[in-house]
Amino acid sequence: MSTAETIDAVELAEIYTRRWPLQENIIRDFLLPLGLDTNHGYSKRPVENSEVAKKRAALEKRLANVQRWAEGARKRSLNASKLYTKRCKLTKERARELYRVLNDHLMELEQQGMEDWRVRKTIKEEKAVADAEIEEYQQRQWKAYETSNQEHRKCERYCQEQRQLLRALENLKAHERVMYELDNQKDQVMTVFKVALVNLVMWTRDHYFPESYAHATWKRLAPFFHLPGLVTQGQDVVEVSLRPFNDKRYNQDLEALCERVNAAAPCLPDGRRLQLSVQMNTVARPILDVQKRRVA
Image 1 (tube, rainbow, N blue to C red):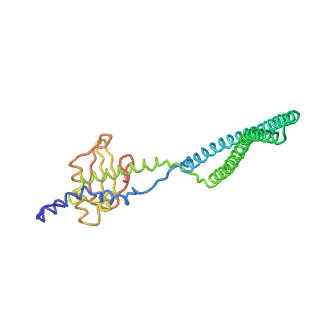
Image 2 (cartoon, rainbow, N blue to C red; image 1 turned 180 degrees about the horizontal axis):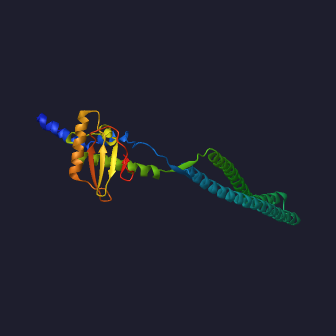
Image 3 (spheres, rainbow, N blue to C red; image 1 turned 180 degrees about the vertical axis):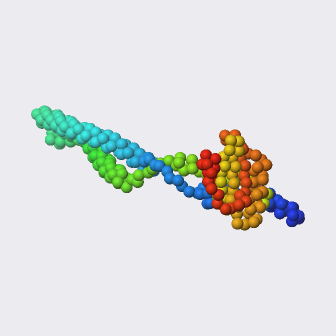
């Protein structure tokens, strides 16, 4: 794309032509023919299901808290119940003592010969004071009773939640799916080899094939790599004699390929020079000594 108002058509075509070698389509063209998208297998090992582990951890944490809270509520309820019993006893003892004092005072006033209306008034006033004190004892008593009931209800709720949490953990375990960690090292190694093969093919194309093959993909290059022929191994030279195509144009390209390889004089890893040629006579020849010649 350009922001210029006008652009030369030839220049535009050259820009797009220069972009072609950089396109990912070139690699994609090698993808399927060479099997770059093939999975060569993998190993696996069971691992922890992370999602289930998170849920289990949350449930177990909540269960531990609820168990602790239930135990605390149970203890507080028991202590409040004991306190209620103790305060009931204190209330009865205090009420008995106050009414005993009140009766003694009544008998004392009667023995003194006080008028009846004065006795009734005095005893009534003293009884009101005693009842007020007893009421305070009873309020503390019922406060302990309510605390005991409240903590008991808490304990019941916590116990109910414990059962729900335990049931949820059992269901989680029953429906848990086994997760596996894939070891695709083998597939990665094979992918590296295949990418290396693609790079080797592209390097061979760029260095030895004619200019018309500059952007050729594997589909066009494959016939050259699949050519049969004979390999003759010498002390200093390894000669590969390739069988020609049935197509004249392909044979011209093959001869150009051989000329460029021979001109570059590449060497094999053992130091011997590689030389390519095209068989001029396609009639079957006898196989020579296997030490010097073998079918390619």
